[in-house]
Each structure stands twice: as C-alpha cells, then as structure tokens.
Amino acid sequence: MTATSFPSEPNALGASAETQRCARCGYSNPAARAACRNCLAPLNGAGVVVGLARPPQTKRRLLQGSLFACVALAAGLFTAPGSPARALTSRLLALSQKPQRIISVPVERGAGLGKFEPETGCFLGAFVLCDVNISGSMTRWEELMGKGHASYLRYVGYGKPFPKAWVADVRKIGAVPNLALEPNHGLATVQDAEYLRRFARDCAESGGPIFMRFASEMNGPWTKYHGDPKKYRYKFRLVSQVMREEAPNVAMVWTPYCTPLGSIPDYYPGDDAVDWVGVNVYSVHHHDGDRNHPAHWEDPAKLLQPIYDLYADRKPIQISEYASTHFCKACGEYTADFAMDKMIRMYRSLPARFPRVKSIYWFSWDTVSGKSAENNYAVTDDPVIRDTYRRLVAPDYFLPRIPEGEYWRQHPVPHGQPVATR
Image (tube, rainbow, N blue to C red; front, side, top):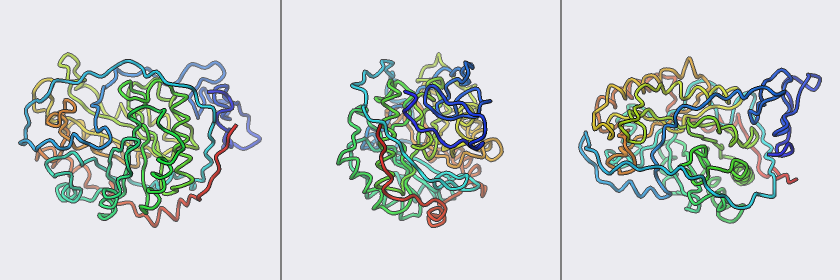
C-alpha cells in the first residue's frame, strides 16, 4: 500500500499535538506511538508490535454458497466418525492485475459507539441452518436455549441471490441477519456492477439492520481470497462503499480467523471502511482431525486477546463464530468436559475482560455427520452441552434482541456518500 492509499483521519489529540505520518499508509499518529493505529506498521524504526502467531488452528471449510451440506440426515445424540479428514491446501492464490482505483469511504459515527453497537452488554447470535436436530429452525433453537438471540448467521457465495425468504424469517422473530458474503471463486469476481448493486438494494429493502461479513478468514490459505492483501483491502472497500451508497442499514464486519496472527493487519481495510471487527475462534480437541496435533491446552480467551488488543479501542468486536467440540473425530472420543471448560472460559471472560466484545455467535453444527470437518459443535444434540450453554447465556448481560428503532436514532447513516478516486 502506498502512502496515499488512505486519507489521514483527524488526530484525537488536536491539530496542535505532535504527530507523525505513517510511511506505509499515510495515517496521522501521535508521535509517541510505536506502531501505526491504522495498519500497525512500525513507526520510527520500532519493532513490529504484533506477536508471533500460534500454530494455525485450521478450520473446517464449509458452506459454499447454498449450504448444500445441510441435507445430511440427523444422527443420534453421539455420532460415530464419518469421512476422512479434509486436508487444507497451503498453496497461495495467484491473483490477477492490481486494481487501479483507490476508494475512500467517508462515514459518520455516533459518539464513541460503532454502528448498531449497544452501550453495554453483548448481542447473542448463532448459526443454526445446518443443525439437523432442529431442522435449522431459529424458533426451536430459542425454545431449547431458553432465550431469544439477537442475530442469526447465513453464508452466501458471491454471485448467489440475496436470501430474501430467510432474511424475512429472521426479521419475523425479531432478530437481525448476519450475511457472510464470500467470494469463493476469488476476488476478481467482486466488481462494482449490477450483482453487487442489486444485492445492496435488496439489503436496504429488507428493512432493519444487517451485519455483513465480507470475505472472512482472509488471513488463512484455505480461502480463495488469501495471498494479496492490497487487492483484498481494495475489494473490501469497494463493497463497503456500495453498501454506504445503497444500503445504509448494513454494518460492515471485517473478520479474520484468530490464527495465523502475523498477517492480519496487512488485510485490514481501514477504519473508514469497517464498522465492526470480527474474529472466528474455535476450541478444538485436535487440529485438522490429526491425533498427533492436540489442541486441548489452548485457551479461547487467549486466542481472542490479540485481535481485541489491536482493534477494540476503536471498533466494537464481534466473535463471528465460536464453538467447542464435544465429539472429536481425531481421537474418536466424547469430549464434553473439554467442551464445557472452553465454552465457560469464553463466555464468562467477556463482561470483565473483553467489554468491547458486543456480539458472539455460536456455530451449532455437527461437522462430522455433515462430512465437512472433524468436530461436533451442535449444542442441540447433547443435553449436558445444551444446559451449559443455557446457563452461560442466561444473564441479562447477553442481549436477546437488537432494538432497531433505538439504534437507528443513535446511528443514522445518510445515502449517497461519494466515492473518491485518486
């Protein structure tokens, strides 16, 4: 990225304060900082402040657009191991020509709060579409969990239609949709063209807030949009700008995976293009379904901490996916004690340790019987895990709904903000 790629933001210390401009992105920083607040590049020759990543906790590759994997029949409460473990490719994506236009996304924000961010508390969210035990029913999920959930997640492959019927169902129960829009065929398909404009207008016409996770887990080589941070930043900003113009009800969520950590700041599109910073975190018993790579020692709160430290002072944080495994295919064992320990660590750490985490989504899917990955995360098929989850989310701190009218008044976003080119 060149020094002219992003406009400098007004310095919080005022015009008279001593500042230094980042040579990498042009952002104006307080002189005493060791690293740029926008792109995390070292300032004044300082060392890089981002720590070394843990061994990457490789994820399941799921849901290519239409969620075809959800047709698997429901199994019993404890499902035997299914297909062999899927090996993730490490080959980096060879990307085409570099973009010619730099996009600037001016955005108005409320005093100290992000778009649709609650002053206190944490919105509950969930992914339940592939939970065969409840046939993907949000209503049944809430009955079993004993509490409403503010938001539900769905994956949409870039190029696929806006899921109008599903969004209407989410709104019908008083919740807010979270759409993970994923360019599964690469970033070249993402253009300011009719598809993206129509998708944005459909978002606007749906009524009420929408969270949009565009191209998440970009820091992992398992995605088709990994490997060219500059192109990624450009495409994210393009999508963000189209949403600003066509769908002011959309909050843009930038969501890396928790590891590998070192490259995450390279993909950050900039404060003006991002409304929420998300992160996907999983507590797995073994990595990659491999018995030789145990992961039982990992603390989910420690996996969350680096992202929180980097971005929570300026953005609300969304745990866009979280789950802990209660059946591990690698060792063929029922791991309820492990699952309960990890989920307790995560949810109970939020109020005191991570107060700017303002939403968290449980990923409820048995990926073993779904033949997608190596872990059973479905809360609904185990009474011990379900009751643990119920107790964890029962406190008033975890918010069951997003009061749309209140947040619209707090965070109005006008139509028609311009695209600046240089």
